[in-house]
Image (cartoon, rainbow, N blue to C red):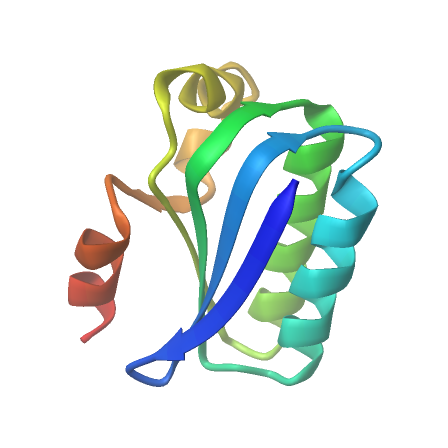
Length: 111
């Protein structure tokens, strides 16, 4: 699991790569919660490099969304592949999250 955080256009982008599972989700959770505690107006979680995500990864993203919603921050998801998209669709979270095909599309929506 790799995590990179960068800022672009007043937006924090958290790039994740690898597998998000029970072993790696605590590190992802720590990163997301650190950024939401700073109350950034916009966070984009870039899942382009994520090959697998289990329910612990989904729970981590839901928690991040809840924290961002508490301060009216935007919490967007970008770049989910077919396998990860299926997890979102099966859990019906594709209706809860704002999901974009790629990071550029997400940035255009908030510009």
